[in-house]
Length: 364
Ligand code: PMP
Image (cartoon, rainbow, N blue to C red; front, side, top):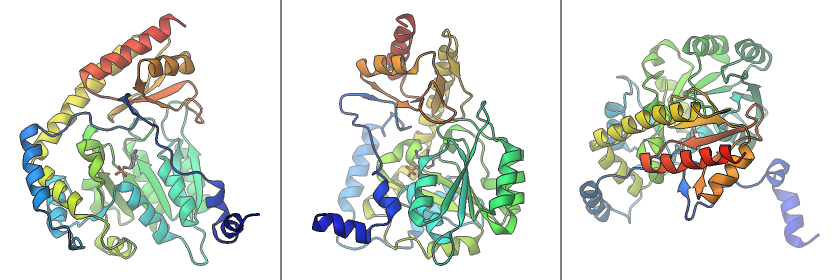
């Protein structure tokens, strides 16, 4: 073995050695419907003003680690209940990692549990933190398998349970009563994270229910709202619990440019909310058009994407590829045979997607 290979064998954890880095598809020249981004940008006059703010930002100093102004704007403009603070992350990806790290390590090998298929970072962060990930398969209609969820919770006493609401990659909202039953069943042996990354498109939230449950964390992000590029997630929970996670957060994780851009965008939150409304309308239209196609099933979605089952996913994916439309092919994931996940976009981009799907069905 070479020096480097021996070094790696001696130093890097076997799970990391066996893993691969997170893959992001090359989207150059494609209509990008794979990553649940908002296709709209801020209007030109706001971008100009933002440019001036960014130009004036102090870059030679570290950002203020308290982020007090930004946190205040998040709390007051994004529906965090009174009396609750937030912790900020470099995307909610980082918050997932912070929580996994906070419960793991030492002599413990905790269980982190989530329904599957689910957001990949739940299992990845569990693995990287040295926790055991337990996935509980959803039922065929993508609803929670509640009996199995409760049985696995009783069996493993998970330190963390992730429930994405709406769920990715399925798009649906789990039954909130079943989620409450899970939060109660987990009790004081585990923390339940309701991940509301797609909350802006769902018009429902667990935020208001925070006072009912001491073991509840509600996590959100500005990524899907139109600010994926700045990387900013936030989470809230009972102050004493939040204070534990704060110890794990890297002190300067929110950079000055993100802080500046986020504060500016939150001052114009109505623009982003209007864009979310447009995307909700586009989702309903696209779902209806897809559902009318022969052999196509569209799963209910409260997010800015649709899970679609096709008669021949590979043929449709090839057609979309030829039309330069990038979607996420999830057809090889357990429970998602024949499915693709497509982000809802502008009317023009949605039309290109639909035309390619239709063409793939007629040539099938
Ligand atoms: N949670 C869910 C359910 C997601 O789908 C995503 C992004 N795909 C995230 C969290 C992460 O979002 P971000 O890191 O951009 O805030």
